[in-house]
Amino acid sequence: MAKPNPINNLVVVSDLHCGCRLGLHPNVLTPLDDGGHYSPSKLQRIVWSWWCEFWDRWVPEACHSEPYAVLVLGDTIDGVHHGSTSQVSHNLEDQAEIAHLVLRPVADRCDGRLYMIRGTQAHVGPSGVEEERLAKRLGAVPDEDGRHARWEAWIELGRGLVHATHHIGTTGSQAYESTAVMRELAEAYTEAGRWRQRPPDVLVRGHRHRHIEVRVPTSLGYGIAFTCPAWQLKTPYSFRIPGARQSLPQIGGSVIRQGDSDLYTRHWVRSPQRPKAVKL
Image (cartoon, rainbow, N blue to C red; front, side):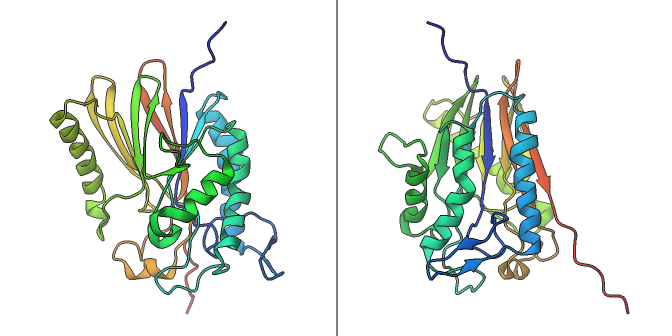
């Protein structure tokens, strides 16, 4: 009996923030619990067209039309947080319905090879309860303790080992954007050496809503660490943060692939145009 073909591709998306009026939303009217409906904004419709382009065109090309697994890196819903009023609804069931509408086709495309990480508790509830409910509904692959949404994932991909979790340090200066990412990689090597365990070949993090990648040479080609872009536009909170208030939102996702020899990454990042200047 022939062995099934190995999965050599891992598609990563993060920080969808479904349920936010600036988060990912399908280009349809979605029903709300009170009988009303929400219609996505012009910018949300643009971001949704990018979501469709990402899955319909870019992912098949980046994966060479081969099967793939999907890793969703947390903050799939926006929740009710920090006194904000930018949500479609403060009913978390409404937000979960939007996220399910977004991710159900993704789970189907990867034939159930869906892995989900728990994000920030302010967004997805204490201990990530809302992310766990959504992951279970989507049929995400459970961990050894039966959790469908986990805090971290160790994934063997081809010859390499991937470690993923949601959080990583941030910075208010783009000049130091790579610092925490490089530190995360160095700490992974230190921890593995301390306990004589295999170090990860690729580290994946979310939370920042910005993409950056660092690499160091290793026996497999490179040790890689990167942060993921998001699928949320700029919220009122971002205008309080140095560096973020001037930057454009980064929308997109990534593929980690086992090639003929090396493990490598590809990234797909888009950004909307900045607001038009006022002519005096």
